[in-house]
Image 1 (tube, helix red, strand yellow):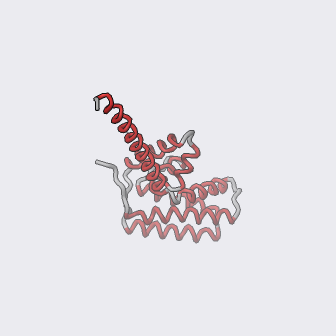
Image 2 (cartoon, rainbow, N blue to C red):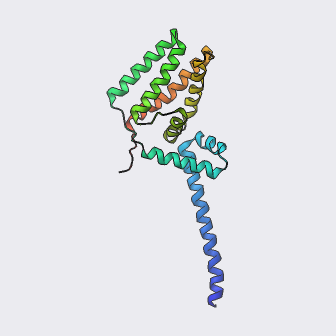
Image 3 (cartoon, rainbow, N blue to C red):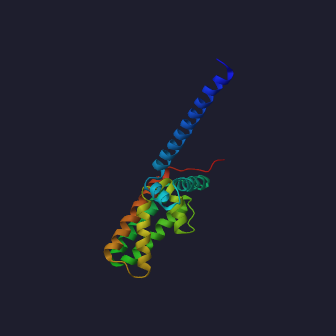
Length: 185
C-alpha cells in the first residue's frame, strides 16, 4: 500500500474519531450542566439566543460562583437564624405583609453571611443557581409576591405561599452551612 493510500484511509478515520470525541465531550458537558443547575438549565437556555449561548452563561455563573468565598455557618449562627425564622413565621399571623418583607430580608442576610453577594435580585438568583438551582424557582416566586406586597396587591394566600417559598431556600441555605466551597488559592 502506498503512503497516499494509507493517508487517504487514516486521515478520515482520525477526523471521524475527533468529531466523535468532540460530540461526546459536548454531551458530557451538557449533562453535567443539567445536573448541576436543575430546572435553571432549561430556563437559562430558553432565554438565550441559542443553547450554546445559554450554556456559556451557565459556565460564566460557575466561574463567578467559584471565585466567591462561600463559607459554612457556625452552629450558633445557624441556631440564631432558625430562631429568627420562627419569629418571622409567628409575625405572619398578625402582620402577613411585614412577615413576607422580613422573610425576604432574613434570606438576604443569610445569603450575605454565607458569602453570597446581595447587590440585586437577578445577580442573587444567578449566584444561587450554581448550588441551589432546584430551589431557585421558590425564591423567584417568593420575590415576585414580595414585590406585589410593596404595592399592597398580594392576597393572604399569596403571602402564605411566599412564606413557603422563602422557607425552601432558607432551609437549604441554612443546612448547607456545613458544605462550603472556597475560591481556589
